[in-house]
Amino acid sequence: GAFRLRVRDVLTGAREEAAAAAVINATGPWADRTRRLFGLHDEILHPTKGAHLVFPGVSPHALFAASPKDDRMFYILPLAGSLLVGTTDTAYPGDPDAAGATDEDVVYLRESAEEFLPGSSLFRSTPFFSYAGVRPLLRGKGATESHLPRRHGVFREGPGGRFLTVAGGKMTTFRKMAEDAVDEACAALGRKGLCTSREAPFPGEIGGGKETAEAFALSLSGRYEATAELCRHLVSLYGRRAERVLEIAEESPALAKPLSPHSPDIAAQVVLASREEWARTPQDAVLRRMHLGITKNRGREAIPAVERLLARLS
Ligand SMILES: Cc1cc2nc3c(=O)[nH]c(=O)nc-3n(C[C@H](O)[C@H](O)[C@H](O)COP(=O)(O)OP(=O)(O)OC[C@H]3O[C@@H](n4cnc5c(N)ncnc54)[C@H](O)[C@@H]3O)c2cc1C
Figure 1 (cartoon, helix red, strand yellow):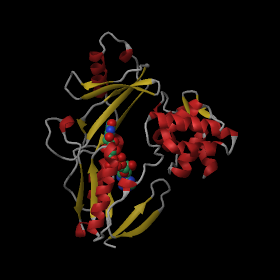
Figure 2 (cartoon, helix red, strand yellow; figure 1 turned 90 degrees about the vertical axis):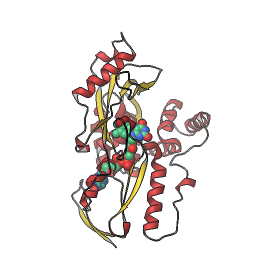
Figure 3 (tube, rainbow, N blue to C red; figure 1 turned 30 degrees about the horizontal axis):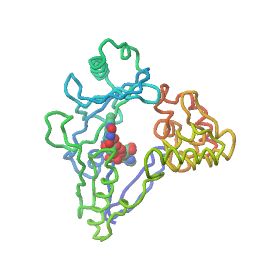
Figure 4 (cartoon, rainbow, N blue to C red; figure 1 turned 180 degrees about the vertical axis):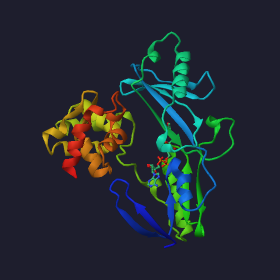
């Protein structure tokens, strides 16, 4: 292969060497750091930070508008029995792992929310939690960070153009990004095949609209020991894969039980996260793969039970 890679598993410390004819760098906001490992020191990203606050409060309405303070995208959305207030969009050249909501972010979000709903005391309370992430935007022209284009690009660099970086884009364009990256990698390797994901259904895809999803949830409830409410919840998270969760729940009565009073999530979802979604740690399962992770305590109360379950599975 054109590349010899030394890789280290940061969870276990295991080291391995691998040879590769091509490398695809799909490390999002870390993409430039990864390029540096390959000796490429210019930058293709203009990373920006987005911070959010989650407040106590319930509303059937969602608000999406330009912030009266500076015309940036702004929203107040119902989220798992709370209100999500976001977002900021500020240049962030630092370590993506260290991103968090600063005091300045909190003031900006609180004041914007209060300008939309003057007189409301909703946003004077202490938020349940805040979170922030770094957008891997490509360098480009824009009056402010919010005006930078959200397009993606595939960059062929290194020997034979076989070190490929795919970056930019949005969560919603992930399939197109993957297709373009694979097609470019095939071109770099002189292979003719084109990526076929366009025809492949999404994992768990049900097809049709809300009615089809509702009919599927009710059919699950008829076939498994599960209420229609739980089935709707699981279908909203997993689509057709909700059936896998219910199959696992039949393995033992404890797996059919909820893990917290704050979420309908059941223990079988932890097993699915471990067996089929590569979750390794309790936080990995709860924060990245379960509804619990967006509830007011972020699933903290369920962590000991999740830890015991994962220990039994490993
Ligand atoms: C606050 C915020 C709000 C957003 N809102 C939306 C939205 O509403 N809609 C939307 O469509 N998009 C949204 N996005 C954008 C979307 O999240 C990103 O565009 C998308 O996640 C980028 O996907 P990616 O696969 O390129 O990178 P990522 O999803 O960041 O994945 C990169 C992965 O690489 C891993 N990695 C990094 N370095 C290494 C290494 N050395 N070895 C192994 N693994 C490594 C990381 O752990 C990470 O899992 C938002 C982003 C942020 C930050």
